Image 1: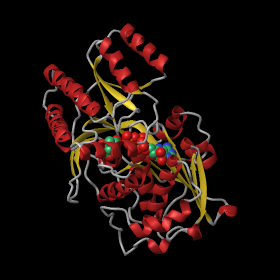
Image 2 (image 1 turned 45 degrees about the vertical axis):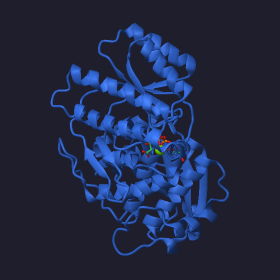
Image 3 (image 1 turned 180 degrees about the vertical axis):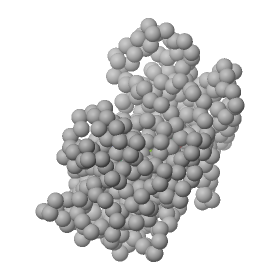
Image 4 (image 1 turned 90 degrees about the horizontal axis):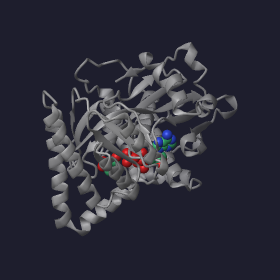
Length: 423
Ligand SMILES: Nc1ncnc2c1ncn2[C@@H]1O[C@H](COP(=O)(O)OP(=O)(O)OP(=O)(O)O)[C@@H](O)[C@H]1O
Ligand SMILES: C[C@@](O)(CCO)CC(=O)[O-]
Ligand SMILES: [Mg+2]
């Protein structure tokens, strides 16, 4: 029995090492995406509506338009596949012809693919799906994975494939509950809809939270995901160039370069693999001391240089690195697909306040935005029985009208945190 309205939420991520290569190390952020699922009023009973104000998309389809017959819905949980179901992809195309913007198309395609695959005919009412995010979108912080996880968990709940989450956390190890693995697998399909050839690390972190070292195996063997317990407390500055770009474009361009220069790039990818493994061992040292931090900084500098050689930096990312280097703040690398988006700086200790002021003044001149965030946050969550006080916020109108991320966090994200259920 699904109680409406309900919320799902999932974190963004920051890749510490391993973009465009394998394995990669990523950690969940405290910046999150929220999905509100609410029943429509009678006049919209026959419709499925999207309200995605963060990307300026508002769209609806008739429930009767959905190609339910194309979703293989045997008894029990439908298995996610290694590739998108071509018959379903073709069946959905006519429903997307009026959507021209690539941002809108990607989000609507991801929605429809997961909705038809997981809800099947279990949708008795007209429903509205409203999404808001405290993450910058297209900035390398895994916003596409976080919305894919929000959608996959909501549809799994509506479709009866997962029961109300049960809190299964102990202090050290997050148990890989079946629900989590099911959401992880289907959110990977959502990522495929949005950016074509994902590694799976973004949605793995958005589902499971915490920090992981992750490698998707080529021959479809389930991915190797090693949860990293007890992350060392590393002091990171997260800076957004606010230069828009699409991960799909960067991922495909790297694939072209690797294909055109296999010998030259082979050693680059091998070096990036070695860096990720060396960083993993450093971060898991029982005592993360000055020597560990110093070595991690060297690896950040080397990793960034290799990413530059693959063509995924951007002048604005290089400006962030230059300003931080000039002020001896620490070591900086791009994070996520690159081409704009965000950079992270592993900060040295005891930086004077006036040094930060000089840096932030340079950032402000360039329109860059820095984030205070913590690493290793919680994964996917569901809020199924909101407290009475929250219900006032849980209508599409109020959700759409949140003016800023602070309002979302204080109204929905933080105050309700004790009543969220995490898998
Ligand atoms: N809050 C949101 N509302 C609607 N759509 C969203 C939202 N967040 C992300 N998306 C979808 O995800 C796309 C951005 O995904 P993309 O992979 O290009 O960037 P990213 O995930 O933020 O960065 P990276 O993949 O490098 O970590 C948007 O174009 C949109 O389709
Ligand atoms: C660029 C990339 O390595 C990370 C994007 O956040 C692509 C992926 O792993 O899905
Ligand atoms: Mg993405």
